[in-house]
Image 1: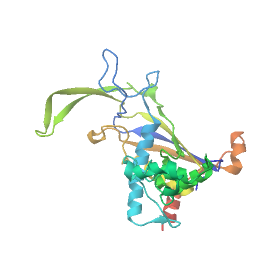
Image 2: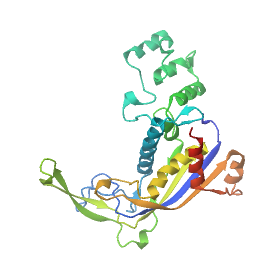
Image 3: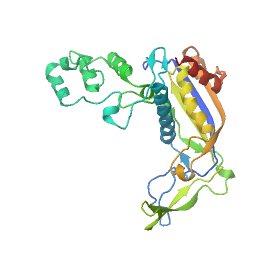
Image 4: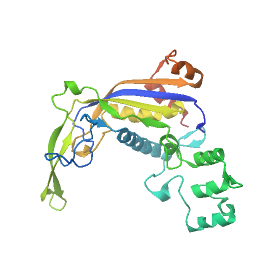
Amino acid sequence: MADFWRFENRTIIESMLVMRTALSVGSRASFLPAGTDLPVIKTPEGIPYIPGSSLKGVVRSYVERLLRTIDALGRKHQGQRLWACDPLNEQDRCVIATCGPSCEQCEDCRGNCCTNCSRCKRCITNRVTENGRISDQRLAHELWAQSCTVCRLFGSPWLASRVAFQDAHLVNAEAMLHLTEVRDGVGIDRDLGAAKTGIKYDFETVPAGARFGITIVVENAERWEIGLLLLALEAMDRAALPVGGKSTRGLGWGTLEDVRIKRIEAQHLLDWLAGTYTPAPLNAQELIAELTAVLQ
């Protein structure tokens, strides 16, 4: 179980996302008189950027698909199942909020009806409550034990994420002829397979050639878990994992350049904070190889 109470290690992954096609990361509708229907998200200075939440969603979705394949193949890590729940379906989550009407009885029976329920957060909470006080350590341990591999790493309603994606800012704005461009779009009649009358819109994109700096910070993760993240970045590097919307019409495809990985262990924390310690760079392929080595 990862320790949420103290610093064990921190891994920082930095890279450059170079767009080979235009990018569409939408914001809310523009309120400008001549604004587009679907503008890209920008900083207060008007510079496009990719929100960290967009990058995290892309990487998490890929890791979920990867782990479902690993689980279907029966591969395990030290005898433990590697798997991904469905975070968008309440009943298919690894930990659910409540197990149904019967769970309402817990307030009266002081948790006795929840003894054998391991998936319900409410039952778990009742089980670790003594004399009206919740044992935070026991609660965290039980939630961790029940959570899937993805929720342990990326977080859930009950567990904090150990992976933080910073907003990816445009680094070559001055070298670009224009920061955005407007494209036309039309609604398609699914019966006729042609443009539907009266449904035309325009949307804004960031042109191909834009370069965005990516920084990912991972707390208290094992090296094989870093390998999982790097598999997703490897797919992005091969232009096999798009970012943003409208990828089926060619947008959002890019590659990664200059992937840099550094890891700070607990014994070097104070020196690193003081600026007197520089961690040695790690090799992405070696970390991925460590992941494949631990799968049984």
